Length: 301
Image (tube, rainbow, N blue to C red):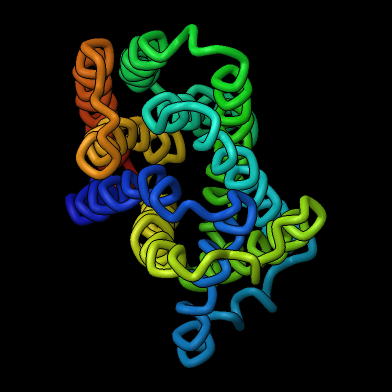
Protein backbone atom coordinates (compact mmCIF):
# COMPACT_ATOMS: atom_id res chain seq x y z
CA UNK A 1 0.00 0.00 0.00
CA UNK A 2 1.48 3.41 -0.94
CA UNK A 3 3.00 5.13 2.09
CA UNK A 4 2.11 8.52 0.61
CA UNK A 5 -1.56 7.57 0.42
CA UNK A 6 -1.59 6.53 4.08
CA UNK A 7 0.21 9.73 5.14
CA UNK A 8 -2.31 11.91 3.30
CA UNK A 9 -5.16 9.86 4.76
CA UNK A 10 -3.85 10.42 8.31
CA UNK A 11 -3.45 14.17 7.66
CA UNK A 12 -7.05 14.20 6.45
CA UNK A 13 -8.08 12.39 9.66
CA UNK A 14 -6.46 15.10 11.80
CA UNK A 15 -8.22 17.80 9.77
CA UNK A 16 -11.71 16.29 9.95
CA UNK A 17 -11.28 15.88 13.71
CA UNK A 18 -11.55 19.69 13.97
CA UNK A 19 -15.05 19.68 12.46
CA UNK A 20 -17.22 18.95 15.50
CA UNK A 21 -15.52 21.42 17.88
CA UNK A 22 -15.38 24.15 15.22
CA UNK A 23 -19.11 23.83 14.48
CA UNK A 24 -19.79 24.18 18.21
CA UNK A 25 -17.51 27.22 18.52
CA UNK A 26 -19.01 28.87 15.42
CA UNK A 27 -22.38 28.92 17.21
CA UNK A 28 -24.29 29.53 13.97
CA UNK A 29 -27.66 28.07 12.84
CA UNK A 30 -26.65 24.45 12.14
CA UNK A 31 -28.03 24.01 8.62
CA UNK A 32 -26.70 27.39 7.52
CA UNK A 33 -23.30 26.56 9.02
CA UNK A 34 -23.24 23.21 7.20
CA UNK A 35 -24.14 24.91 3.92
CA UNK A 36 -21.43 27.55 4.30
CA UNK A 37 -18.81 24.91 5.09
CA UNK A 38 -19.20 23.20 1.71
CA UNK A 39 -20.07 26.34 -0.29
CA UNK A 40 -16.93 28.13 0.89
CA UNK A 41 -14.86 25.03 0.18
CA UNK A 42 -16.28 24.90 -3.35
CA UNK A 43 -15.56 28.63 -3.80
CA UNK A 44 -11.93 28.11 -2.74
CA UNK A 45 -11.57 25.23 -5.20
CA UNK A 46 -13.36 26.94 -8.11
CA UNK A 47 -10.44 29.00 -9.52
CA UNK A 48 -8.10 26.00 -9.45
CA UNK A 49 -10.74 23.73 -10.97
CA UNK A 50 -11.38 26.17 -13.82
CA UNK A 51 -7.70 26.89 -14.56
CA UNK A 52 -6.68 23.24 -14.49
CA UNK A 53 -9.47 22.17 -16.84
CA UNK A 54 -10.51 19.50 -14.32
CA UNK A 55 -14.20 20.17 -14.97
CA UNK A 56 -13.81 18.81 -18.49
CA UNK A 57 -13.77 15.38 -16.90
CA UNK A 58 -17.27 16.00 -15.54
CA UNK A 59 -18.57 16.76 -19.03
CA UNK A 60 -17.07 13.50 -20.22
CA UNK A 61 -19.00 11.36 -17.74
CA UNK A 62 -21.59 8.90 -18.92
CA UNK A 63 -25.25 9.57 -17.96
CA UNK A 64 -25.02 6.89 -15.26
CA UNK A 65 -21.87 8.46 -13.82
CA UNK A 66 -23.52 11.87 -13.79
CA UNK A 67 -26.38 10.46 -11.75
CA UNK A 68 -23.84 8.94 -9.38
CA UNK A 69 -22.18 12.34 -9.00
CA UNK A 70 -25.54 13.89 -8.12
CA UNK A 71 -26.09 11.07 -5.63
CA UNK A 72 -22.71 11.87 -4.04
CA UNK A 73 -23.75 15.51 -3.60
CA UNK A 74 -27.09 14.48 -2.09
CA UNK A 75 -25.39 12.01 0.28
CA UNK A 76 -22.88 14.63 1.44
CA UNK A 77 -25.68 17.14 2.00
CA UNK A 78 -27.64 14.57 4.00
CA UNK A 79 -24.55 13.73 6.03
CA UNK A 80 -23.98 17.32 7.13
CA UNK A 81 -27.69 18.15 7.32
CA UNK A 82 -28.21 15.40 9.89
CA UNK A 83 -24.90 15.44 11.74
CA UNK A 84 -24.36 19.18 12.34
CA UNK A 85 -27.73 19.69 14.14
CA UNK A 86 -26.86 16.72 16.37
CA UNK A 87 -23.91 18.67 17.81
CA UNK A 88 -26.34 21.07 19.49
CA UNK A 89 -28.26 18.23 21.13
CA UNK A 90 -25.57 15.88 22.45
CA UNK A 91 -21.88 16.05 23.32
CA UNK A 92 -19.22 16.42 20.63
CA UNK A 93 -17.82 13.04 21.68
CA UNK A 94 -21.13 11.18 21.31
CA UNK A 95 -22.05 12.89 18.05
CA UNK A 96 -18.70 12.28 16.37
CA UNK A 97 -18.48 8.70 17.65
CA UNK A 98 -21.89 7.82 16.25
CA UNK A 99 -21.43 9.55 12.91
CA UNK A 100 -18.18 7.63 12.37
CA UNK A 101 -19.88 4.24 12.62
CA UNK A 102 -20.27 4.37 8.84
CA UNK A 103 -17.47 1.79 8.16
CA UNK A 104 -19.79 -1.05 9.16
CA UNK A 105 -22.19 0.01 6.42
CA UNK A 106 -19.39 0.80 3.98
CA UNK A 107 -18.08 -2.75 4.24
CA UNK A 108 -21.48 -4.16 3.37
CA UNK A 109 -22.15 -1.68 0.57
CA UNK A 110 -18.65 -2.08 -0.90
CA UNK A 111 -19.12 -5.82 -1.22
CA UNK A 112 -22.50 -5.30 -2.92
CA UNK A 113 -21.78 -2.37 -5.23
CA UNK A 114 -18.00 -2.25 -5.71
CA UNK A 115 -16.98 -5.88 -5.59
CA UNK A 116 -14.50 -4.96 -2.82
CA UNK A 117 -15.14 -7.73 -0.33
CA UNK A 118 -13.36 -6.75 2.89
CA UNK A 119 -10.97 -9.30 4.41
CA UNK A 120 -11.74 -10.98 7.72
CA UNK A 121 -8.92 -9.02 9.35
CA UNK A 122 -10.26 -5.70 8.07
CA UNK A 123 -13.73 -6.59 9.36
CA UNK A 124 -12.26 -7.60 12.72
CA UNK A 125 -10.32 -4.34 12.99
CA UNK A 126 -13.40 -2.31 12.12
CA UNK A 127 -15.49 -4.19 14.69
CA UNK A 128 -12.88 -3.61 17.40
CA UNK A 129 -12.84 0.09 16.56
CA UNK A 130 -16.65 0.13 16.52
CA UNK A 131 -16.66 -1.52 19.96
CA UNK A 132 -14.49 1.35 21.15
CA UNK A 133 -16.97 3.81 19.69
CA UNK A 134 -19.72 2.02 21.59
CA UNK A 135 -17.79 2.31 24.86
CA UNK A 136 -17.48 6.07 24.34
CA UNK A 137 -21.15 6.46 23.47
CA UNK A 138 -22.22 4.39 26.49
CA UNK A 139 -20.47 6.88 28.76
CA UNK A 140 -22.73 9.65 27.42
CA UNK A 141 -25.96 7.63 27.73
CA UNK A 142 -28.87 8.58 29.92
CA UNK A 143 -28.78 12.31 29.24
CA UNK A 144 -32.43 12.58 28.22
CA UNK A 145 -34.56 13.01 25.10
CA UNK A 146 -32.51 15.77 23.49
CA UNK A 147 -29.36 13.69 23.66
CA UNK A 148 -31.23 10.70 22.22
CA UNK A 149 -32.48 12.80 19.29
CA UNK A 150 -28.93 14.04 18.74
CA UNK A 151 -27.67 10.45 18.73
CA UNK A 152 -30.29 9.43 16.16
CA UNK A 153 -29.41 12.36 13.91
CA UNK A 154 -25.73 11.44 14.13
CA UNK A 155 -26.53 7.84 13.19
CA UNK A 156 -28.51 9.12 10.20
CA UNK A 157 -25.45 11.12 9.26
CA UNK A 158 -23.42 7.90 9.41
CA UNK A 159 -25.75 6.19 6.93
CA UNK A 160 -25.40 9.14 4.54
CA UNK A 161 -21.61 9.14 4.98
CA UNK A 162 -21.47 5.44 4.08
CA UNK A 163 -23.36 6.14 0.85
CA UNK A 164 -21.00 9.04 0.10
CA UNK A 165 -17.92 6.85 0.58
CA UNK A 166 -19.21 4.07 -1.66
CA UNK A 167 -20.46 6.35 -4.45
CA UNK A 168 -17.24 8.35 -4.21
CA UNK A 169 -15.11 5.23 -4.56
CA UNK A 170 -17.07 4.27 -7.67
CA UNK A 171 -16.71 7.72 -9.24
CA UNK A 172 -13.06 8.17 -8.30
CA UNK A 173 -12.26 5.66 -11.02
CA UNK A 174 -13.60 8.13 -13.61
CA UNK A 175 -12.93 11.57 -12.08
CA UNK A 176 -9.79 13.31 -10.81
CA UNK A 177 -9.90 14.44 -7.18
CA UNK A 178 -10.30 18.15 -7.96
CA UNK A 179 -13.24 17.69 -10.33
CA UNK A 180 -15.02 15.29 -7.98
CA UNK A 181 -14.47 17.37 -4.84
CA UNK A 182 -15.52 20.69 -6.39
CA UNK A 183 -18.67 19.26 -7.96
CA UNK A 184 -19.75 17.27 -4.91
CA UNK A 185 -19.16 20.22 -2.57
CA UNK A 186 -21.02 22.65 -4.84
CA UNK A 187 -24.01 20.31 -5.25
CA UNK A 188 -24.26 19.58 -1.54
CA UNK A 189 -23.88 23.28 -0.68
CA UNK A 190 -26.75 24.30 -2.95
CA UNK A 191 -28.96 21.55 -1.51
CA UNK A 192 -28.11 22.50 2.07
CA UNK A 193 -28.75 26.17 1.33
CA UNK A 194 -32.24 25.26 0.11
CA UNK A 195 -32.96 23.11 3.15
CA UNK A 196 -31.65 25.84 5.45
CA UNK A 197 -33.97 28.38 3.84
CA UNK A 198 -36.96 26.05 4.27
CA UNK A 199 -35.98 25.59 7.93
CA UNK A 200 -35.86 29.38 8.34
CA UNK A 201 -32.08 29.39 8.75
CA UNK A 202 -31.13 31.73 5.86
CA UNK A 203 -27.44 31.84 4.99
CA UNK A 204 -27.19 35.61 5.49
CA UNK A 205 -28.53 35.29 9.06
CA UNK A 206 -25.20 33.87 10.27
CA UNK A 207 -23.76 36.11 13.03
CA UNK A 208 -20.61 38.10 12.18
CA UNK A 209 -18.69 36.40 15.01
CA UNK A 210 -19.22 33.02 13.31
CA UNK A 211 -17.48 33.83 10.01
CA UNK A 212 -13.85 33.19 11.02
CA UNK A 213 -14.85 29.75 12.29
CA UNK A 214 -16.87 28.95 9.17
CA UNK A 215 -13.85 29.82 7.02
CA UNK A 216 -11.72 27.51 9.18
CA UNK A 217 -14.35 24.78 8.74
CA UNK A 218 -14.11 25.15 4.97
CA UNK A 219 -10.30 25.16 4.97
CA UNK A 220 -9.43 22.46 7.51
CA UNK A 221 -12.02 19.67 7.82
CA UNK A 222 -13.50 20.23 4.34
CA UNK A 223 -10.65 21.15 1.99
CA UNK A 224 -7.82 19.35 3.78
CA UNK A 225 -9.93 16.64 5.40
CA UNK A 226 -12.64 15.61 2.96
CA UNK A 227 -10.57 16.35 -0.13
CA UNK A 228 -7.80 14.19 1.34
CA UNK A 229 -10.31 11.38 1.88
CA UNK A 230 -11.53 11.76 -1.72
CA UNK A 231 -7.92 11.57 -2.97
CA UNK A 232 -7.32 8.44 -0.89
CA UNK A 233 -10.45 6.76 -2.26
CA UNK A 234 -8.77 6.44 -5.65
CA UNK A 235 -5.83 4.56 -4.15
CA UNK A 236 -7.22 2.66 -1.14
CA UNK A 237 -10.34 0.59 -0.57
CA UNK A 238 -13.50 2.37 0.56
CA UNK A 239 -13.75 0.07 3.60
CA UNK A 240 -10.22 0.96 4.72
CA UNK A 241 -10.64 4.73 4.20
CA UNK A 242 -13.87 4.61 6.19
CA UNK A 243 -12.23 2.48 8.90
CA UNK A 244 -9.48 5.06 9.39
CA UNK A 245 -12.10 7.77 9.97
CA UNK A 246 -13.04 5.90 13.15
CA UNK A 247 -10.04 7.68 14.64
CA UNK A 248 -11.89 10.98 14.33
CA UNK A 249 -13.61 10.75 17.75
CA UNK A 250 -10.22 10.70 19.48
CA UNK A 251 -9.09 13.96 17.91
CA UNK A 252 -12.52 15.59 18.24
CA UNK A 253 -12.82 14.60 21.91
CA UNK A 254 -9.38 15.98 22.76
CA UNK A 255 -10.06 19.22 20.89
CA UNK A 256 -13.47 19.59 22.57
CA UNK A 257 -11.74 19.16 25.95
CA UNK A 258 -9.14 21.80 25.05
CA UNK A 259 -11.41 24.33 23.31
CA UNK A 260 -14.79 23.76 24.99
CA UNK A 261 -13.92 22.29 28.38
CA UNK A 262 -15.78 19.02 27.62
CA UNK A 263 -13.65 16.73 29.76
CA UNK A 264 -13.67 13.15 28.45
CA UNK A 265 -14.88 10.39 30.74
CA UNK A 266 -12.89 7.28 31.57
CA UNK A 267 -15.11 5.47 29.06
CA UNK A 268 -13.93 7.89 26.35
CA UNK A 269 -10.30 7.08 27.09
CA UNK A 270 -10.99 3.33 27.16
CA UNK A 271 -12.95 3.50 23.93
CA UNK A 272 -10.21 5.55 22.30
CA UNK A 273 -7.73 2.78 23.10
CA UNK A 274 -9.97 0.22 21.40
CA UNK A 275 -10.36 2.46 18.35
CA UNK A 276 -6.60 2.77 18.00
CA UNK A 277 -6.23 -1.01 18.30
CA UNK A 278 -8.87 -1.55 15.64
CA UNK A 279 -7.20 0.95 13.32
CA UNK A 280 -3.89 -0.88 13.73
CA UNK A 281 -5.53 -4.19 12.74
CA UNK A 282 -7.33 -2.56 9.79
CA UNK A 283 -4.14 -0.89 8.56
CA UNK A 284 -2.19 -4.14 8.74
CA UNK A 285 -4.98 -5.95 6.85
CA UNK A 286 -4.98 -3.34 4.06
CA UNK A 287 -1.19 -3.46 3.74
CA UNK A 288 -1.37 -7.25 3.51
CA UNK A 289 -4.11 -7.19 0.89
CA UNK A 290 -2.20 -4.70 -1.25
CA UNK A 291 1.03 -6.71 -0.99
CA UNK A 292 -0.74 -9.93 -2.06
CA UNK A 293 -2.43 -8.14 -4.99
CA UNK A 294 0.88 -6.69 -6.16
CA UNK A 295 2.56 -10.09 -5.98
CA UNK A 296 -0.21 -11.86 -7.91
CA UNK A 297 0.67 -12.95 -11.48
CA UNK A 298 -0.15 -10.26 -14.01
CA UNK A 299 -0.69 -7.56 -11.39
CA UNK A 300 2.84 -6.63 -10.47
CA UNK A 301 3.88 -3.25 -11.85
